[in-house]
Length: 294
Image (tube, one colour):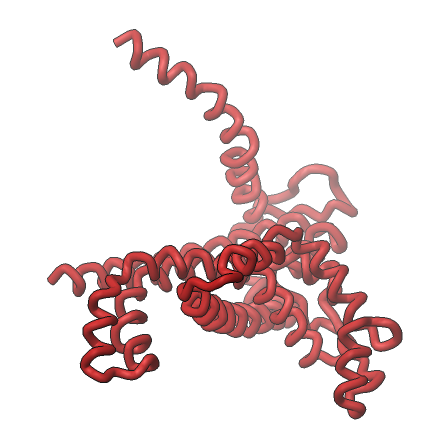
């Protein structure tokens, strides 16, 4: 009994830290989302406005634009990351001379901070002195002097590229862990029967990797929904609002326009979107496991 009491007592400091840094801010932001609070007019939350802040979100063009930008970014980055990570994992599965060296090099992009990645790619795609811009111009003369980050479509493509470059290595190692659980005997038997490599991958490997791929997809979706650092340092939400993700839009509402009530409501809308997507992924994962055990 004393040991149990001591264990609970030792958890108190950690619980207080979580309460102060996570639970209290969450509760405070939820309360704030139902109030009017313009920091340019008052220092504390104002009158209770009910669901007005949430209703305003779905009628404002800025929110609708950021929601569309986020949807495009999430879908493209998640699909490309999954495809690239799975492809790299299948290549790294075959051990060779450079096996260990390749894995070490592969983890370097993930070790860099997102803000630094955004700054680096902003310089590299500069049409005057950027190494990537100059390299593309040397190989393809038609691309010489192209203002890469001044075009809405190109800016979005570069933003997706940097995100995939950052997260693909981490997801590759997760795929390698999943591939380790796929029995080689099944593949060898299929190869003896004359199955091609593509048929083995799509008919044997990928079906047994569905659970792992769903976990990777939900993690990458959540990370993509929270995309902020690279938007700030790479595109600044531009040109115009073509790369203004929902997280960056919330930042602008709260810390540029000082509408804290509306920003809190937007943050909870983003949280609800993440929770709904996570629940959907988990239900798919559980149904997949039931089918596998049936």
